[in-house]
Image (cartoon, rainbow, N blue to C red):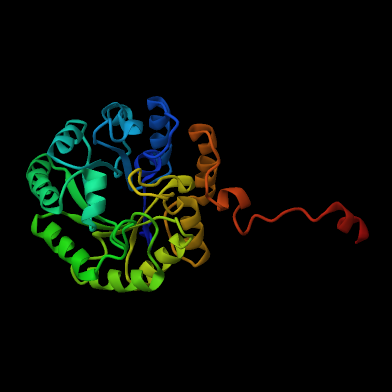
Length: 313
């Protein structure tokens, strides 16, 4: 039987971006179970953890232990976020399939997030690419705050695109444009994505939206209509940047899958299975999560007619 590829690729980031901001410690075993469940759900790419300073992001200090114990599904790419060569070396030693390097378009946010200037960050990326390729690992490079910075405001398109060009010059395999604090709007998204697609193919460009101001799914729809085909999302809408005031979660995986299915886009993912996984998250993180479909159910999940109406028939 011929396998029909999905119309849209949804990459799961809850284990890294989702858990990095959580104040409650999520045990290593619980993280491993979550990632194994996401693997079994059929995601083609899962961001497992981050090899940054434990002092900066203590919630992910067990990255190496998590990578060592997860059950790797054939065909799934297991990604690690890395800020510098030291982090990359640790990630490669842990057998990460892909390194996701991050630099902010905003120099102020980059200093707050990575404690580095743009030039120092780019020098770090140059140090990462060659050893990663030598180990057979992929390298993706993210432009954080691509749609706006909480300290500097809107970032000029030319500035963002220049960073994309410099990434490509360093031979990265994929590019992510990240709306780190949910400042994007659909018109802005359509314009920037259209220009980015002149530099990067849709197979190598990822959009990473946060729902801080309630526009996450609208922005994803605008990006898809413009030609983007790869999107990050987090189960339950978990996540947020620890170094950005007012940060809140990523677009919610099951909500994005529901949107796609409602408008006829194939995702290759089972929405009901994702809802079941999302319903376990409050027990994992100790609070309610922001996803809506897991609370309301799928649009086609009908309810019984009230008893008083049945009696009157």
